[in-house]
Amino acid sequence: MTESHTLNILIVDDEKVMHTMLSAFISELGHQSHSAYNGADAFQTIQDQSFDLVLTDVKMPGMDGLELLEKIRKHTPDLPVVVITGHGDPEMSDKAKVLGAHDFIIKPVGLRPFMELVQEISEQKNAPQE
Image 1: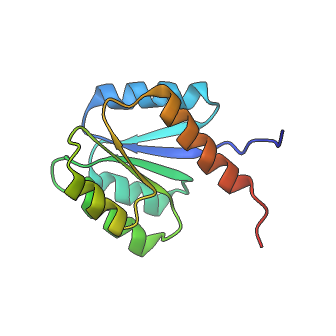
Image 2 (image 1 turned 30 degrees about the vertical axis):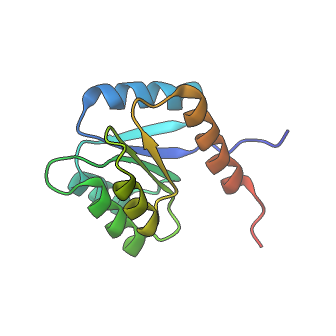
């Protein structure tokens, strides 16, 4: 088994309970989490710090998650962004993928799929660069 890279993960959601739950999942997996409660704060944080993964809700006051995704793609094109929403709208999922989302997850977030997603990102970070 290869040594795992500790991921620096930004959680963007206006619901404190989601931050608490996702932070617990992330900590359990041995990674670091940081929080932002809206898109504007998240984008500023991304400009100031380096992250391996962004988990963002869609529906937030001000800049929503899809707007944030667009800005991240322009600023840091290789940063994986996973869109998490309570609204399983296929149109929104398609738009997120067109904008460059790594994945689209519908709430409630299950532990197993979340763990698999984080493991996938970690393995990509550990893969030898060509």
